[in-house]
Image (cartoon, rainbow, N blue to C red; front, side, top):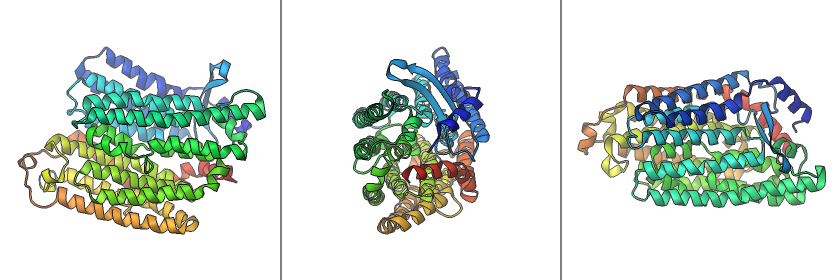
Length: 503
């Protein structure tokens, strides 16, 4: 557990509110500046804001004490005193790396949208910065109500980004479907947080408790944990997405802009919520229902892989591939081991670079050819060799090929799952084999072979800024694959504390 003494020491050691700076002064302040700027300057303002956000995030990473398993850089201010709700933010080994990776992904999306966004570019970048603010808030919130606020705030910019800049004829339907599904998922989530707060008030302090650290230090009664577990599991399952609550993702991938698809597949906020809240707040119930988590993971791995094989569109293939990989993360969580959790976290970090990077490349391809259907492609590697090469490298990382970051994450998960749920581990191995089948098959059909489309013949390969972005993502994929301790050393202490909560 995380002691109050440890928390007090961390709070007193931090004098500069760097986390609040990330939330308020940069994305939000930049969005306000964008309101008064012209359209031509909008992308530059958004890019500069993201570069500064990335640099601040890296400062946090370099100052982070990897030997301290508790929360660091904690900031606490009164917010709604009558309900005992405070503004509390902080980071630990589980959340710290999501900050620079989120900033990197959003910076990549801004660069990828440099020439493709011609309609209302200022509004596009404002909404993108607001979405980034809400996403960062999810990763640093240490108050359940504050977390829920940021969780719901992501819906507004996503809704308008899909409606105004979506590429499909049914983009309005996709936006409404996503919003309604996420609002439905928010109901059990909020109810679970309130129920935990009331229970703590009844048996402990007499006051409602929404402080996450306080809740961890005062475990809920075993008989209540089952209710809390299922409420939070259901709420986060919508966003993860966990089969069978995944149907919104293919719709977003097909109808929405590539930037939103990159965020949806690159940042698995639902899986993060399972790790941060569901298991720690209901550890006994989570262990009692380990078979349910493992079963959901198996179904996701196999279902997503089988559906991905039958797709004839690159976007839809990646959407179902994402469902399959989320299933693998759930299996890592269900192993309830330090190794499995580190593998799950590693895989979540990988999504930002691999899945996010693949959708960014697909956005480049769609902008050049007007389609991601296999019937309209073929021979892309002949006219766009750089784009095809990076797509192949990112795809190999998704398959877990040695030398890439995917290899480390998948092996950590598989070894831990084979030890704890042997049958689930074997099913996961089958899913990985299927992943190789669908990716290599669709890559051969889309990127190799003769050129049949005149648009592809005259298409331009990656521009300089696009190439630099692809190189940055590719280098990180290789670096994390060769030197995994860069990630594992940061997550080790917090992962061990997470396991201690179960014991």
